[in-house]
Image 1 (cartoon, rainbow, N blue to C red):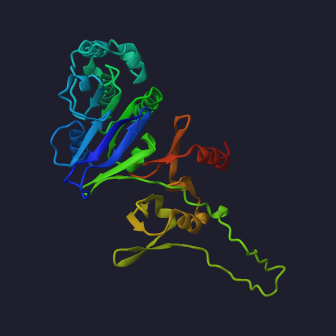
Image 2 (spheres, one colour; image 1 turned 120 degrees about the horizontal axis):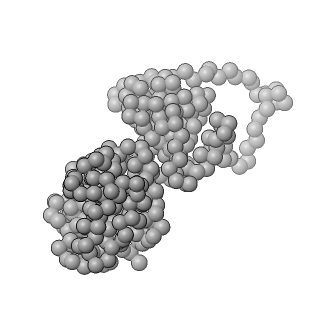
Image 3 (cartoon, helix red, strand yellow; image 1 turned 90 degrees about the horizontal axis):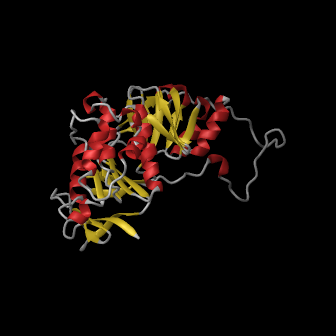
Length: 351
């Protein structure tokens, strides 16, 4: 049964009546990638507040309105600017919030889930920024809600806290929770869930990242490979080694040295090339770029990413099925990696 349904309001979309934009059932997590302002407006709309975004949310087929007590007890929310009582101790803070509800989870269990079990008697004022964020996430779960809504939970978190957060989401999904979160980058979205949406001024759209056929798997029936050694009619042609890519950008062509490319991301039918001299966009597919860049140690670590292994600095294991490559660029970009690719790259580097 559908637990959460997000619709375009009648009269504010192109459709004559409300149309469904997003649906979630028990045990599912959806991530909406957008900027801060759109994310805040989106969550306000989902919670039944006026925002001008033109969407509404249904919780179990009824309008989601947080002024109804039965809804408040079944929905847990956490915003970026949620405050804390700095003079309280960590466990006491959760116990305090738990008293507001008839159903609640043990504070000790929540602290374990967010990696703060060793901080139960620590004053909140002594926690780091990331630890405070994790504590607020725990607070949003104190009443054991069915629906969890978080605003940009990875914003400015340190690496260890990101790992804890992603394991927390996995644990909540395994428990049948419905999770809706916003985030600022597509890289973050891909780490958090397979159900990804992009929110722009034009509306809410699902992001599809379909597997492209591998070059080695593409076959053409009725043809045979010609061997120059056995067929005298086949001439030998010396192909010049690729030195630079020529990328069309606006009204000009840019020559890019493959060594300057950090990684390439596929999104919305285009390939976005991130380099040391800036970002470029091309209509070439990742498969085409993978073939062109094969001599330069580029690796298809994910169906939507092609990375230059010469710029890879770390390989991180988040969960048993979630991995990422850290790129040695200014942002220390983290590129998602599928489990199959993880096993392949271990063989490549000799692990």
